[in-house]
Structures are given as structure tokens and as C-alpha cells.
Amino acid sequence: MLNHDEIVISVQEESDPVDDKTNEDEDINNNNESNKGSSNADAFSALETAMEWYEQQNAVLLNYCSSRELETLQRKNEGVQYGAAKNK
Image 1: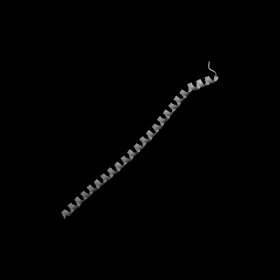
Image 2: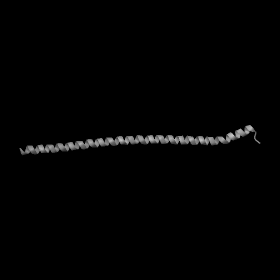
Image 3: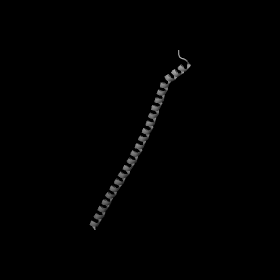
Image 4: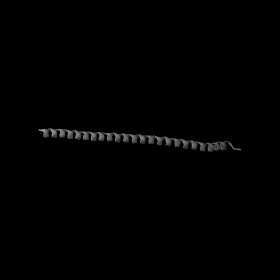
């Protein structure tokens, strides 16, 4: 038969593994949540970078198209001026 102190020690020993497992599970859950948070932050940062790149590409394309249109208009204008000078 166990005395009072032995019963207390026995109960503590039996309950410690459960507490340790519970604490380990909590640590794992906390780590998973922090990993998810950093993963979401990384994904958001990557999306922001992609959107900035996309906007820059649109600006470059718009500038390129505008300069090509300007060149085309200048050539047409030169052609009209050349034709008018030729007819004189």
C-alpha cells in the first residue's frame, strides 16, 4: 500500500507526461501559426512586388507606344510637308 507522499509522487509522475505532451502540442500549434503568419506576409510582399513590376511595365509600354506614335505622326507630317514642297 502507498503512503500519502508516494501517492502524490505517483500522481505527479503520471500527470507530467500529459502536461508535457500538451505543452509540446501548444508549442507546435504556436510555431505553425507563426509560420503561417510569416508565409502570409511573404506572399503579400511578393504580390506587392509583382504589382509594382506590372505597373512599371505598363508605364514603359505606354511610353514606348507614345514615342512610336509620335514618330509616326512626325513621319506623316514630314511626308505632307515634303509633298507640299514638291508641288510648289
